[in-house]
Length: 110
Length: 117
Figure 1: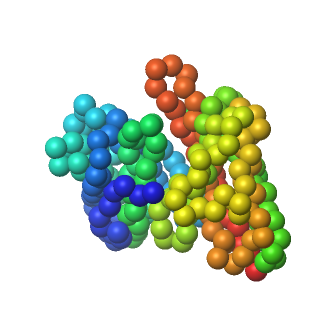
Figure 2 (figure 1 turned 60 degrees about the vertical axis):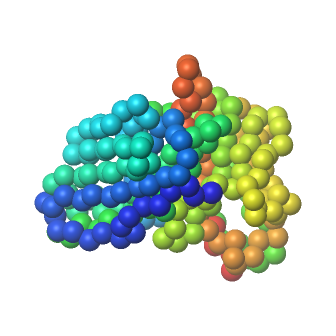
């Protein structure tokens, strides 16, 4: 079952621009994870941020977490055409169950 | 990272037939395996959770008699779609979880595309 919502549902940008995706959730969490999925393919784990962390970086990715607002954002800087994919947030909550958000479809135009 | 495989990667079957999808954890023993379904342009929806040697727990709205899950060993779980219909056409993704230490680690398979004609 989906716990959270992601916005925007779809995002189209030019190569080189930054892409920001937001995720909101409803219940308390242990951690929040971001995944990438190319069309018709499996999930690739991008980054995990724990509930006691506020910001995390990995290469061109920057993730923030605001537990008071129950929201997270994923920023991809200097986007490339190869970043075109769907991005999902997933929260790990009670019972160590992973619950996915609705996803953002990102298109980066060359 | 750990590897989870699925077989087949895609399958086309006729309406009314049954299809079995395998999920294997290749280099770790998975205490728990999850099956997800994903329709086009939608998110992953958890179908069921299975622990090795016990019956699967199905999410609300998922028919346990239609989607048979067997978790026979710590490295293999199977999902059988019985009497498949066109509306069962979807992308099925399994995930395997283990606990190497204090934390859980969960890994996803590459998915199986099922098309029912």
